[in-house]
Length: 417
Image 1 (cartoon, rainbow, N blue to C red):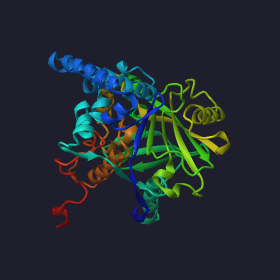
Image 2: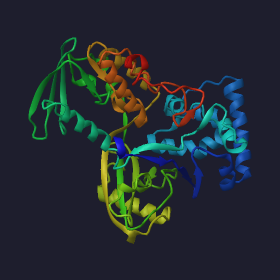
Image 3: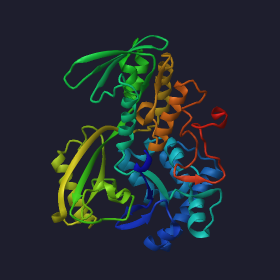
Image 4: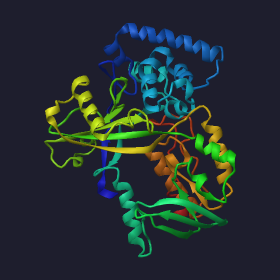
């Protein structure tokens, strides 16, 4: 990426009942916005949860239990329940605690107190305060990859708008991949290695030899949340300071917002304008998904103007909507068992690899998916690495640990020698 990478300062906040709260949570910020009474209430509910989950060994069975064990009932209800249920479309009692262990293990009411009151860092050097981003938008990462692939050899090609319909296995490292282009023409290519980011619930159903009914049932049981992303273009220099703003209120259509100009000034063609990207979490064919793009866009503009007081509708230049069906893999209470059945079937295809958020049905951050891809590339080249050993650790994803040596699988001294 070279000079195309910029560094972005991280500023994340939560919008809850008309007030803004720092994210990750700050006790001082909660006191300022909600008052000392809320903190006392939060402390009492945390002590009750500590009694239940630590001293009395109450089992953690679902997402609610995991959050309450870490933060107590009051902070769970304020900062986790409503947003989680908005994202996933299910009560927290029906979602696995695994998501919490991946996203907030190591973060608790005690780390919050240390960070905000005692000003100590413990083993955590700091919560991530800045990150890398492509100057011209995230799409530049796959575009740069495609440019290098094509430049490397005249026989290399990147086939876009090509839907894989069948993967036939003839034996170890011997595949026939069939895909359909936009004109409906089917083409088959031979392959020694197949790397699949196809959603894990779809892949086993297009494999040959075919899977049995138990695998089909497991595959059909894996679900995703969909997403309608609304980009609102504004005749306004800036709306917010946030990198991300998490919108808790159920009566606001979108759940998360960011202003691309805050990530990179190159994301707008004219510095007197800006844009807002609004994420509307939904499920295929539900009431949000069934709305037209015009209805979704107008509703988002109305929420920005009348409920959040961010804009005036006269400042809107235009808007557009992008619909994504398989955006977020859902961790329901049975998802792990379903994945185990599917992976058991796929293990019989030597030379087939699954990777990425959808391909593994694992809620990776973008950097985890990139790391997984880099490691898989090394594995295919013959190095002894476990590319699936990315993002299994019970460590909060947005904490930078001073006591842990950063892993570097990519340049090893002994290989350079």
